[in-house]
Length: 476
Image 1 (cartoon, rainbow, N blue to C red):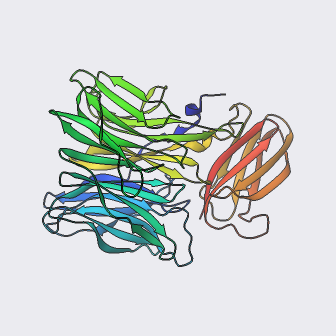
Image 2: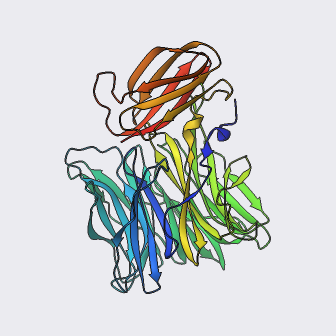
């Protein structure tokens, strides 16, 4: 069988998501449901003010709607948007799909606020989250998908702060726990991981060098002592390796430089996973990584680390991706300066990750423009050799009829199964007569009970004697 990283595929062409006549930076993306995602980012036309814009994306890159302004005011900077989504909550009174956090200097110093994004496409707020006479900034958050709890960490002046967010079923909203101080003194840029007991890493100046400090949460707002991760070098940058559904991945990635070489450390805090070091003689910035699962032919799950980073190895900034233990791939591939790559996991079909969205900032026409591609994981489900048979689905997304085209090497029976976004089988058609050469079959958007399938993401599996193919489709 092919290595599992070879089964996932990046889209062949990256696409711009914003204009290139203003500066667009710091995007964040959250999945709203199985077929729509909310993207937000900063947009500025002058140094005097910065607005926050948004747009709705189809996760499979099938594009997108027009952008819209969320926040903007002359002389005010609304910056660093971070979105927090709701996971698996379907109360009949629920109208909130996501929380949008941001920094604002409207009152002089930086404060953290949030807006609620509702099902009608409107934002409610603002609501103050963290405000003091000091700058409250650099918010990081992460979701424990099993427990449905978020961990939030940020910087308040020279302190690292933490609060939890627990979903309240009665109010259909999140309640925030009491804020606790994790560390103080020479601190910067916290990153949180909430896949078991919350764990926070941050930069800390120690004897003139930037070190990685960390602490873990036990209970009753009790934190472990502050530990220093002793690695050589300075100029640390940290990014979260986000865990998946409590599978044990608790880790982070950061870079250090000794002036000659750059070292990227993918450090696991779980005994189940290895720690990995990548060394380069070129300048590397902005490492970002995530774990990505694949389902093997035997229905076992395996996962590895997917890494993106910025490198000047070609003379200008380029964005590279790397499956651990495999080669590097240039995914921006332009003469413009491409920087600040980010990864976003977009789950579907239960809790499996079938797409990883990748964004970066590209300097075009004298401004920063946000570009985007995605890693399609669905090719790794029940793989078969490509020379056995081919399958295609059209149109995708579809509304009523979905045409299934498949090419067989010989006559044989074929079956089709369709699963919804939480893995429940809704359609099964067996003993379709397939013939050598090209074949077509139509699915009519109706489940086995004769009911119209609702809009959303589905997985379709075609099986025959030669093997099987599984592909993601979207119904609107």
